[in-house]
Length: 286
Image (spheres, rainbow, N blue to C red):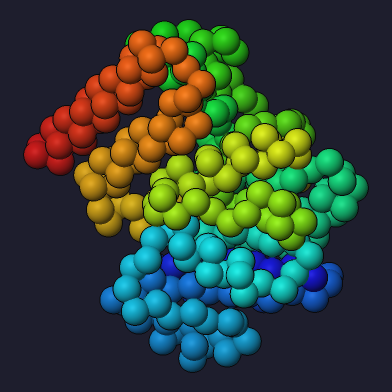
C-alpha cells in the first residue's frame, strides 16, 4: 500500500489539480491520500473536504510548518511506502507505478526523487549535494558558478547534472520524495527544528547516514508548478532558509569541524543570506 502525504498552505487550486491527478492516475495497488492543511485562508480545507471525501484531511488550527505537517501525515499513514508530495504538483499516468516498481527492484534504496517538469516542459533542477563545508565555500566564493561543470567545485547545486539517467544522489527535492515505512521506523520523522527549510536535507542526510541509498529516477516524472507557498513570503523565506542552513551546521558539523573552519562556514552562510536578501530587496524595489 502507498500513502501519499501532502502539506498544503493557501494553494487551493493547485491542491485540487494535484488531487485530481492522483485519482486520475492512481497506482495499480491500494493507496491513501492524507492532506494536512496548515490553516489556509483560501478555503483549501473546505475544498478538499467537499470535493475529495476519500482524502484523509487533517485541518490544523494554525500554520504548524512543513516538517510538522509531514510528521502528522506520516504518523497517520498506513502504507508500506510513503510519498511526500507538494500540492503544486501533478502526477502522470505512470508516475506512481514506476516509483513503486523501482523501490521494489532496489531494496537498498531508502528514498527516490523524480524528474520534475515545469509547465513549459523544461526540466527543473531538483538534485543537490549536501552542503558540506567545501560545497558551501565553493558556492559562496563564486567558484562553483565560475566553473559550473566542475564536479569538485560545483558539488552543491550540481549544475552539471543531466537528469537523463538513474543516479545515486544526496538530496533530491522533497517536492516528490518516496520512501519506505522501514526507513521512517529506523531514522525517525522529520526534525521539527527545521519547520520550513532543510528538514528534507536533514532527513536525506540521516537516511544516507543510516546506510540507505537515495536515487534520482528519471522514469518517475512529475509536473511542478513551483514555489507556490514560499512565493507568498519571499523575503522571510530567504531569511528562514539561511537560518535553517545554520541550524543544519550546528546539528551535524559543530562537533566535527575545527572551530575556525566551523566559524568560517557560519560566516559564509550569513554572508550568503545577506547578499540574497539584498538582491531580492533590490529586485522588489524596482
